Length: 453
Image 1 (cartoon, rainbow, N blue to C red):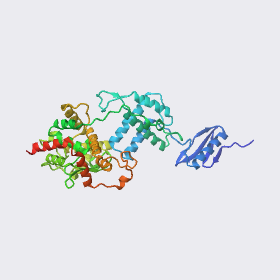
Image 2: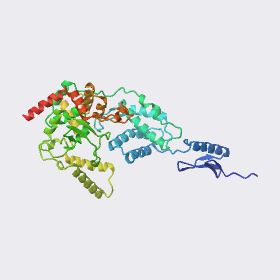
Image 3: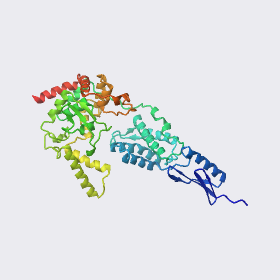
Image 4: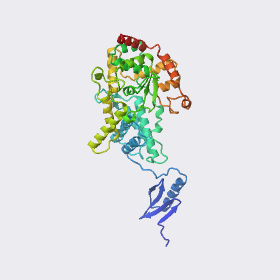
């Protein structure tokens, strides 16, 4: 009687008989795998030969993946952005909001909730689900809900695609299985219902500025003539961010105080002579603090930390963090530390971006300018003015503070931009030429004349 075979080896794969079932054992990328094959010895040898061939050719092994729940994938992916790539807290929040749509979908429907079973057909069902979703446009729970716009739907699908790409890199998808969201060809989804961007014409620009009060005028004039993001304007610090020699605004990252530019890219924007005079008038007898203070501090006692320089503010932040950690008896998370940072900026006089938006809407209502609800429109207006003024594309890119990644759509000059450096005088000359016919300049001259008189 022939002796029963209880084990065999095919290259890097060992087969073992346990009871009446064959198991294969091998190591892939330092991790031990032991898939169950079945009772047939020939079938076990065939599987062992296939796996050994994949290992020798450094190809994905058919049995070397670990399917996880999509909700667990979301947490691992967001934690990767938190601890490894150190994405901004706002970016992580947007990613969580986008992927929460997928979590709700797999929870409420009958599609598989694991990465190993989620297929293209399930991704297509997810798109149909998104077409029926109603959301609050500004995120407020009491605002009127509407269907997702195509742009929002595409963003959600792009974020989910990135999350599943992360899963593929970590072997949470079956080998040789494609990313289910890649097969949707997201980039080909048309944008048919995007909200149109409406810009002020010359008369509307004049009406808007004439409807502002003395506190609002310098703020919105600055947004008009610099193209700053509202958040960037809020965090400008006086006098550090105003270069007196170049007569320019400098937008800087301040990670020590919990604030960074959206693209992490610092930049300089020359100030039109009229705008420079307006800013100087607004900062008379001011020692420190945010460039523009909250309304309540304009004609009253300044905020508690308004006279402190930046190095003192950094020490004050460390003190408040230590106090908070002693109170909680643990180290603060990034979100908790950011909350402490906000108390510092509050005590310096920072204007919240939400308040700028509310003020913008009130001014438009006062001027009977219907349909304008976001101060970001002024950034679009600035970029359009630069285009119409034939400002060099590289200078436009620098003034707007867009990404300089060579593969970015916002940087069509590619590697040339890396080797090209703009002199401040050239930037100033082109910017002033583009702005010279703006009604805002005339209104600002009149505003200055009334206050100097």
